[in-house]
Length: 450
Image (cartoon, rainbow, N blue to C red):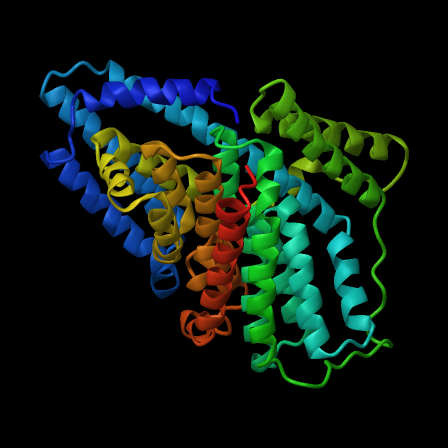
């Protein structure tokens, strides 16, 4: 495992400086905590108030540090620790922000080139039954999310699901839940598949190949949940009229973009593994090549694409949500609140705490939970860091708004995939979650695979 990254070293220095002045029990600590809780209420109740989750998250993340700055000024404290914390936080967020920006740009380009339209057509035109479509969309979600990230995968496949049949609720609800669970489970065993896994990887808690150990636990847990969900999928098949639906044609450069996407991911992994580059550096290099490829297509007289137009379609609200929520957690860390998480791990043990993280991430969302754990940095080996990565990712599926994938699908299937419809099937996800933990236990505690 890597322990010498610049970010991690800087974080340790700032953490030590921050502990010199513990602000958790001061007025700024309590006011910041209230701001975080209120903001998170509006994030969780996004559907109720129609307020995009990025807005309260961004406000809380920036406002909390403004409060800390005011406290330092009023009390004549040395601002250097606060300045260092913000610089370190910006570096941490930038690694994730730019990584996701490039990944989303590639996905938008593939959508624009017609790759996913062709996928949708092939699924619908073959006359598959509802049950077969249920399994196919789930399998696609599980194996696409390790590359495309769970949010993007869930959004694409939920769109495909809705296109297949817009009215059959008994098919759409279990199908949507299956996509969310599969996308989160698939993302748990790849640093590219889930923001929480990406955070653990970039923090040096495991090498790229280490996360592949989670594949058995992820896929078996999902398969169990999928089987239980499939029992409620109706018989029959959706209607398809070949005379009104023509086969989509791929635009020029579609497959070239696919190959460039694979190349970009490879460069990001190799650069991080061998040169200790941030993963986003390889991704930005891939983006540069994609830009040159678009110019090549245009100069060759082919139907090229405008990379900046595709970048406009990137879900900036998601990027700003991550910026805001990671900033808010960074503020809680600086104020001293995350020290209590460290104490909790020492009190109940890493395994119990990490299993509990799965239930907490279902309520609070896995991103801030994972960020808080990484910043509190409890003393754990690779086996426990893999466990918390898996539980944070998979546990977020237990409630509809517990993961970015779930929130995205709620928006895409508005009024169909809801909190209530999800909770009717939540027991199937709990069974799969328990099975995943059991597989992890056999792998690492019985067989000792690390």
